[in-house]
Every structure is written in C-alpha cells, then in structure tokens.
Image: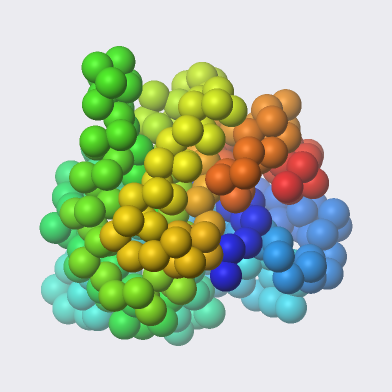
Length: 252
Ligand code: 13P
C-alpha cells in the first residue's frame, strides 16, 4: 500500500554514541507510532544496527540496512547477509545506492541477486536509482531510469512489489546541495509510475511509494513532498541533524 515515507540514510556517519544520541533525539519528537499512512525509517551503519533496533522497538521509527550481500552465508569476507540482518530484527534494506554503484562497482546483475535474496528473506527493499548529470544534460535521463528499473526490477512478479519502495536519487543532486526542482522531481516520479503501470498495472503503480533523494532538507522538503507522485524522501546529510530530519518528517 502506498505510504508517505521519510527515510534517513546515515551512510558512513555516526559512531555508536552519536547514533544513540540522534535516535533518542528523534524519539523525543516521535515517541509513539504514527498514523498508518506514514513511516519513518533510519539506516545506520552495520555495526550500529542492533543497538538502534533495540532502542526503537515499539516506536514510530523503523530500521534499515544500507546494503547487504546476496548470498546467505559463505566465504565473503567483510560482507553481511539478509539472514543476519533478519536475525537482529532488520527487515528493510537499501539496495542500489549510487555510491555503491559508483564506488563499489555494484552492477545491475549483482542487484538482481540482492533483490532476489531480500525478497526470499521477506525483507522490504528501498531500491535506489537515478541518472548522472551528463545523462540529464543530454536529455537521456528518462531512458537511464527506465533501463535501471528494467534491468533490476521488471523481472519480478506482481506480488513481489509489495516489498518494494522506489527511491529516485539523481546523482547530480546527492550531497551537492543542488536539489531537483519540485517540477523535475514530479516529472520523473510521474514517468516512473507510468512505466511501472505499463509493465504491470495502474493499480500496482498507484500502490508503490516513490521517494525522492538528493539534497532534501527542511527548507525544501515541503515543496518537494507536496507533489502528487513524490511520496517521501530518502535523506542523507539532513538526516544526521535531529532538527532537520524532524522538520522534514513533519512536512510529510
Ligand atoms: P543527501 O541528502 O546528502 O544529498 O544524500 C541523499 C542520499 O544519497 C540518500 O541516500
């Protein structure tokens, strides 16, 4: 079911102490569950997942991992599997973030396997995709986005989509301070819903939450989130500041 979602991707920030401080500040603002149409998610680093899961139990805040390996177990030094995440109470995973694609050589083929593993383990996926600046400048951004979704997700059957949250993150807007305009975000989100609808059905497309990510902050969240096809945000830098993240959540 389509929901409004504000998710904070903490990336490689916040040691244990800082993570606890941030989450406790957020819990003061949102001590109890929100109404069923809204969700708050935070994604700490792997080492801080378990303490944050414990602190947020029975609260409004849900916890996601930032990545995972596609295998269940084995000789993959330094990696974490879906079963391990599930074992500590993490039921959501971010996959396909542009930083993983560009810095850690994550390919569409790997993402297909990761998506499969997450689905098998009954995890929800926040699936990230988005074009580079040169794609946008050359007018190729719609093609790039369609290709990314086709390559990694359009092989899924309809029922799998209950576990998918889409996150459109134009690479040129991530960590740059340059945000997509509300019009650019709405235009792309409407396009995404349209291609999902074409591949599956209007009903399924209407049910998918599509988040925007890329320099979203308290000062621009309201405008971005007021668009009919922008169902929430995936926030990086501003999610590290309790007051900023709180304000974004309140504008949802
Ligand atoms: P910023 O909000 O820092 O631009 O990061 C967005 C992002 O990458 C969230 O996954």
